[in-house]
Image (cartoon, rainbow, N blue to C red; front, top):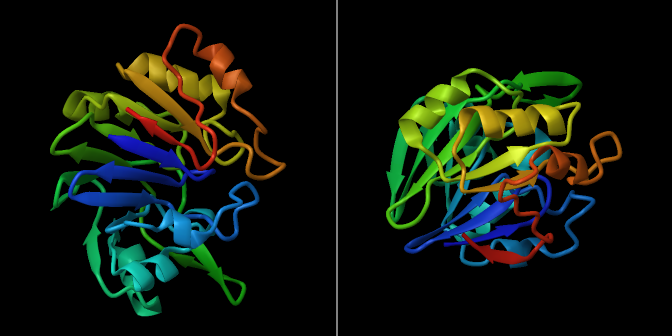
Length: 230
């Protein structure tokens, strides 16, 4: 299985029959210098952890141009359907949906989810993490934006994810110390990929503090736009 990181929380995962793009914040990202067209090549599905602009990103354009199916919590999926996304598969916390080559289960995340329109915050459903279970390959837990939480013990017990995609940038998510504790205390990850750092000046600029906290663990810090096999 191949994974590409496009900066922030955006990942492309090749799943055999399908290609999944998660949280496609691309054209507005200060750290991704490629094109939206390059990132959306081959994409069949888009999954969103929550409705903040730095996660929804280019979802509408990508789904319109590729015909990809959007997988998101009900409020967010129907909101983006009204914005032009034709194919949606709404779900919510605890739910599992199946698509060719993989399943996604939506898990709790401790965060918020909304967008600003004309000075008003519009509620867009629960923030979530994503358990991606391929038909062939390791199970991936993209935590979304979250703090450490005791629910992670149940996520491990139910799903046994082998790869953790973990927000570490602090301020809006876990910082290095909390993120490392979450990984060590609740999970038996074979590999950990940090994300949600280095994008904006007000969050941590790099993964160094997290790497220091995760001494001895297999942490992968990919280059933005690079492909890695897991």
